[in-house]
Length: 385
Image (cartoon, rainbow, N blue to C red; front, side):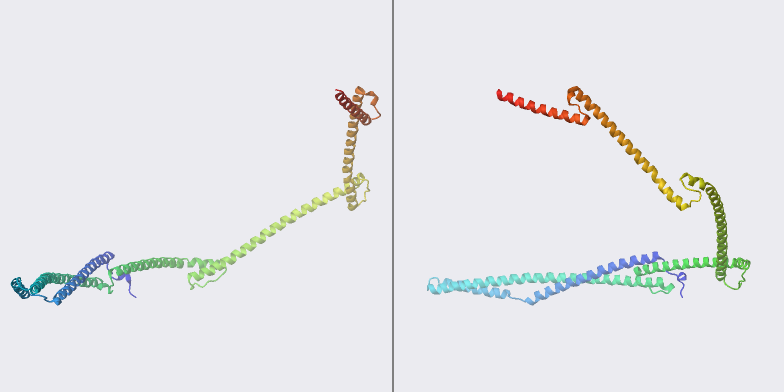
């Protein structure tokens, strides 16, 4: 297995530098390729226009123009000769002259058009030559960029040659470098943990004697050839057994102490209850005499008698309350009679009866009769008026 930490891997700054160079060279190459493609497109357009102008060919010449002018002059001469002659012949000569003039104009236009076309052909040829020169320069520039890229790739591979790694693109190798650094960090952490484990192993080996001594003191014979972790588990199991036994013994001790305390408390309660029973037994005959029973009365009979005696205070209380209510009513009646007799003696002594209620009834009847008589009198006096 290859040890990553021993490989002469290029530094991240070197890889980043090459990444920048690759990006810059790639941009230059893309620009050069675009320029070459644009130049080729311009050349193709100029060549197409040149071919189109070449295919049109010549449509008129100066000889055609000279011949048309000669025919025009002849037509003028004939027209002059026929001016004094036959009118129809003169009109025919005039028509021929007009046709020849139109022919001259047409030939002139053709010659002018050919001149413009020739000018365009010359311009296209010049532009085509310039485009081809520029295209050659752009192609040379592109080839130069490609050559620089090839050199850059060669140096890039040489950078990685000492570590025996075939490199990918710089950007990809940057990510690869980060992963390798992470792996190296994890390896370093693992080595640190291995060192810690070695220290722990040494510490366990040093404490192995203490474990053996503990096992011997606990009544166990341990095998000194066993690893420390196995001995520790055996010692832990023996310690757990001892702890369980100690806990059980402590629980029994506590339970015993609690039982002894409960026994003492129960014995003291029994003695106190016995003394109280003796005291109540000696006082029982006198207590039964107080409720009208003999000294040999049982507790059931005494309980029934006490139930009856418990109702006596309530009955007595009700009787006393009813007596107070009756006395209050009798007193209110006396006061009522005195008040009625006092009123009757003052206003109508002849109406006094045996009781105040009867006297009050007679007084109310007399007042009602007097009120009716007064009503009749008042109605009679109103009618007389």
